[in-house]
Length: 332
Image (cartoon, rainbow, N blue to C red; front, side):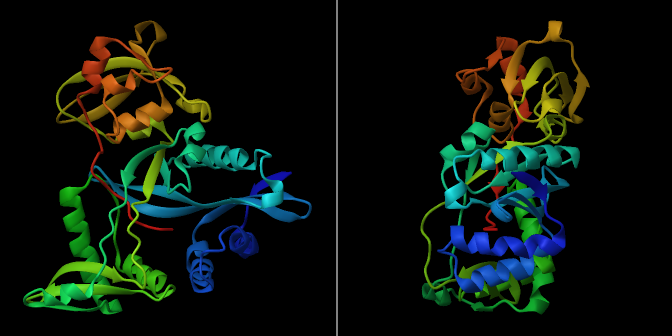
């Protein structure tokens, strides 16, 4: 067994495995993916018997996180050829990629699971259900609204408006750009869809995909903290806070540390190295992710195995303003 990160010129070698493991994806969509996404992504593979038997793709996105820009990887196309499953290949790929992301200075990563139970052992936790709104013929009845296919020359205007709107309503989302929408147009077109732009009195009011079949399911997004320190320092506080506690992480050794979290509503979170004798509790990396992204409170966290907090620590952690307003609707 040999695990490695492929150089860009070898990315195309994974296509055969992709088509084998994801047969429901149309030929046109796979063409789109291998023409577009592999230009800038990273692909980890495990080779055995002179071929690629397992893979994991990291698709990079520029994210808006609590008013700041951060890069984050969307983990997709996690796949193992049927004859090579149950050998621990996925664990090797995930842990290797997570450690590399930490070394690259990334804060968190996320994925859309085929089944949530698969990723719980790797400290991913569900924080969001995707919201999808589609174009329907009934929309044509909206008064004074003109609806037509999005044109390339309109993508920059749409991106500017979308970023302003999303920043007013969400803590975490993928930043839009003209290139983002031009690529999204090609993504929908690969499966026979069209991005429809809505204008009222000349102003853009919405953009929705018109697709052949509308998926009514709400896929979930699971997030895992990569760098606990960077993640915590991305947060804001309700008021003055100061608490010392331990963080544990079974995969990324550098996250196993004792920290002093301090700050005010004006400064946001600041971190210092803490001393074990001053610690008021212990939080594992998965539970910390749930607290940070608003999936649970400090009180609820204490019901989980391996988490301990004094009453004062609970009160201090409740001063964190969680990143609970999330809009991550990308497919790949």
